[in-house]
Length: 181
Image (cartoon, rainbow, N blue to C red; front, side, top):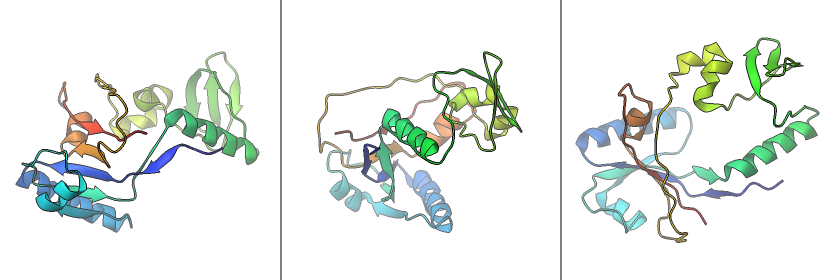
């Protein structure tokens, strides 16, 4: 099935020199992983996203990033698994994962050589090995606006987003906006 996805690219917005230096380090890591990334200075950023504030230092640009509609992506992944001869168990609570597969909350065991773990912060409860990923619950707010096609052209992420959302502070404030049709 077709997944609603759009190649919009991501701009990691930098407010100052320190965030620009951090962006340069991220660019190097992305390029080492053979993923395209570059730096847009303040002038190039204004051309790319004219509605942004004009006091930004620039942005790390990741042009091949895409956004996808999550429920559609989940349906497409399930269809791919079924086409490949695999099983998909929908609406079943998982109690735990282990080397032989998973155990459902109703006690059934499902053998599996491969499992896609996509439970967010609940991953740690399902598989203790996920603790080393540093996942922690966060409270946040989602703002949904009226659809304004073309209002922004890229996914826009505050440079401090990763540190704020995944850091050690009890609270975090971060910005992430995605253009949706």
